[in-house]
Length: 250
Image 1 (tube, rainbow, N blue to C red):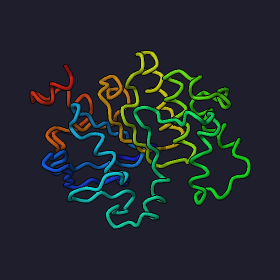
Image 2 (image 1 turned 90 degrees about the vertical axis):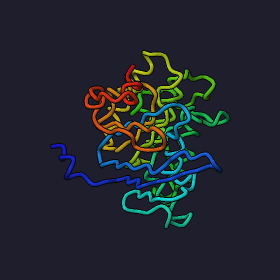
Image 3 (image 1 turned 30 degrees about the vertical axis):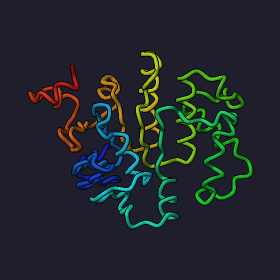
């Protein structure tokens, strides 16, 4: 039985986070929580700070002030090695898939296993783990293909398989359906849902795709002027009379 929202533990807590680049104030006291087993969609206009938020959460950008906790770890207090270890619990799907063009699909998936050998130990035979991840995205047959032999949708699936191979507790998706045709986008959205069910992941999804938000979100956050401007289910937000909120649904 699914836990009630009040019974579920927070796996990510972002409290009053500010982030500036010189005089450009991108995040102005942004606050959000991600609960275990939950999909939270963050939407905002281009340049509103969505991708910056994701980079701050995984420590690729330092915050100007505020706190970010991941599974009770204040990332500002972690050493580089401790942050690297924590990142093995976090999968990150880049907008452009970010596969290594010179590596086969197999080698792309083996790369994080070798890089994070402290989590699994030295794996002599990586094939079972590679195949398990590829089967989760329906592409076991592509194991020996090169990235230039893959369609855009296949690349997105392979990138997701590479994320899954470390069995993360949290997945951060940055525009998972951008650049894909409507049919492939729908397939990726359904795949994200099945992955949540199979792996019991929690996820933050950055997207402009209203259909993706409607289907995948348990909760939505609208990022406006650097703050959590509005929050609720898809249905709750569509019914708000606020002009800035309604602009997202037109």
